[in-house]
Amino acid sequence: MSPVWRPLAAFAALAQPRAELWRTALGLVLTVALYWGAVFGTLTLIGHQLAPMRFARLMAEISRAGTPAGLAMLLATFVPMALAVLAVTRALHRRGLHSLLGPGAGRDALRAGVPLFGLALVLFPLAFLDPNVGRSVPPATVLRWLPVMLPLLFVQIAAEELIFRGYLLQQLAARSRSPWVWMVAPSVLFGALHYSPAEFGPMALWPALWAMGFGCLAADLTARTGNLGAALALHFTNNLSSMILVGLYGQLDGLALYTIVINPRDAAAFGPYLAADVAAMLVAWLAAR
Image 1 (cartoon, rainbow, N blue to C red):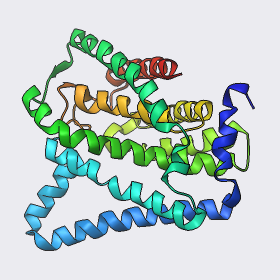
Image 2 (image 1 turned 90 degrees about the vertical axis):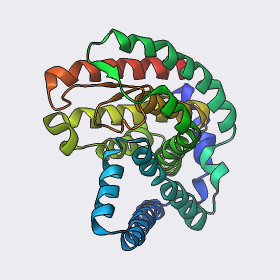
Image 3 (image 1 turned 90 degrees about the horizontal axis):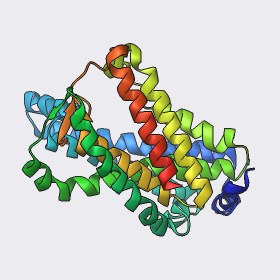
Image 4 (image 1 turned 60 degrees about the vertical axis):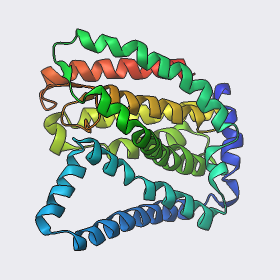
């Protein structure tokens, strides 16, 4: 193992007592079952209280996330995801939130988050040079929704980090020091969950590969620090930039100040933006390191 990943040993040791593969697989299945059960159960209850047409409009608003309320409701669906992984980790592995986060996570989140947020603000004005970027949500509306949106956005990224760079990375690293096991395998799953032909058509593979690459970089930060702090900061600033500063039109843009109006199914139109996003992600990773 690379010397820069030595802190991973202490992070993985927290999962060592109950790191059996069957237990990890069962934990993942239970987390998914609890999450979807909570989401569908809640939606079913709401559906029974609303008229069919009103419920259909509500579901469309959540799915599209093209309004502040729609985006907020979509992000709120990650609350049961976070609660599910915490409950499963406690029940199956006798570990809690502090164990999943790792020692010093709050400190490292601040140490990485401040420069990453500064980098996002520095890059933000460059978007104005693009003729495909236009105003979207009025600043007053964004400011009004920020007290609600920022906590929900943090819950969303925290839920994903707790599962992929917390639970899965720890459990797998407790059994193997190979980065193919603890870094690449969870990141492949993370990327697969971002595969969306309905939204990106023939370009769907590329955003999924982007997400897989992001997962590997977040796992690297976790291994270097022995906690989730830097990965949380990287994920939060990335999603903050894409959901609130400059979003892609039609893709979770309900609170974006500006949006890029292009056809994401067109390789010639979408490719340069994806390449620029990869470059920005690598710069952010280097800054976090």
